[in-house]
View 1 (tube, rainbow, N blue to C red):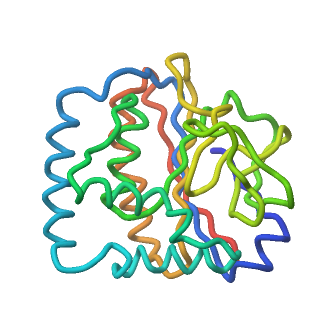
View 2: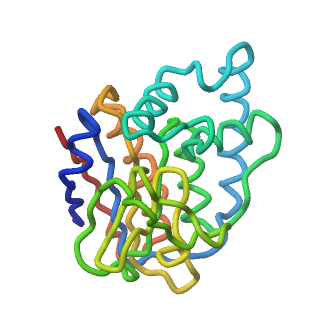
Length: 225
């Protein structure tokens, strides 16, 4: 199981941070399949009922993630956590962009449990992975944007530089048709119960098991205090 290391910078800015990790090897990237639409329709109904009389920002988990952003000086109303952005799309009737089975199910679980997730092609990652805060002037090529500023944000980095944050993944480590080895990272605030994180990653792991040739999907929770 891939381990994430924590920089001194992130430790001084955030009291405690948890990660739900899923590593899957031998994956086969393709369409999400028929069952996905059923899962998505069920989720949309759940979210519309839950947020019929309140904004997503009033939810305890969403607000805790917003506080996590603010601890590093990152304004969540300007750079929304990916999970909150997904929730807002779904309750507004905008649906989800269909990318592939791994990304689509990752987005589904992220929206269902309200926790931001990054998904990375591990074969495109070089060296150790560190959770850090972006340094002055740092940026990386995004999937839908040419450059994403990393300065002051919670980020993941390897030997080649920054490759993602809880709001946007990178082009370099994005999931493609030839991807075989992936790492999903759920960015969780300290207040989130371990049992909830475990339920989150186990649900996505159960989906990912359908798309692996080796049935090789492992999960892990890491905490930095």
